[in-house]
Length: 255
Ligand SMILES: [Ca+2]
Image 1 (cartoon, protein in one colour):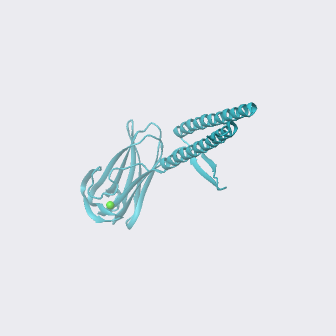
Image 2 (cartoon, helix red, strand yellow; image 1 turned 45 degrees about the horizontal axis):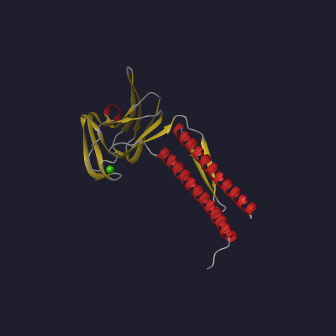
Image 3 (cartoon, rainbow, N blue to C red; image 1 turned 90 degrees about the vertical axis):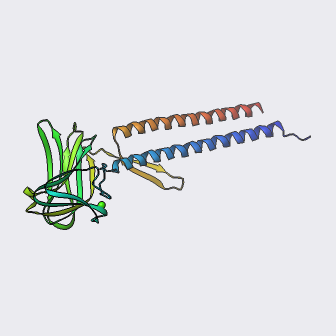
């Protein structure tokens, strides 16, 4: 009956153990790099997401918007301006506005926009309430066949709600007329832009994956946590290798 020699069996175990350590090491690296890329991509995506508005495109109605027609009519139409469904305001004397309140969590510059086709000055407004009144920013957009009408406002810390308005006010419109609105949007920029950081990940092909992104406090916390995980994994991996090498040295000494 044939048996492997003890030395051959021992060599096989050493090679298998060493190969196993190497394989686990690469697996860990791949998992860590994947986690880092996914988390970093998530951070970048979060920075680019606009502030959401309810029913910004008026596909089927004016749900989500409060309507203030005084001396004007404010109606929904299925016609297309930017995409199907729009708001149509017609004014003799007075105002016709749509309003939506938006909860915010950060100070910064907020920009509210809507597309408009009008025969008079149309307007977009952002305001926020303070003790004793409100602070508002108004932009009048001249009559046009089609234009994007925008207004920006710097909102300080401590404010947790802003109000968005668009429509016609005949005190500022230049006379009686009509305006159609569609495709509202609200964007936000932090008041103090955080520093831009860059991470370079070398790839096995020889190329480098370079990721530029900005940090918030939460992102720094996540990154610090991730760095701790990386250090722990690396330490564990080095420990495994050291144990294997020590074990092989012991076996060789006994031969
Ligand atoms: Ca629409």
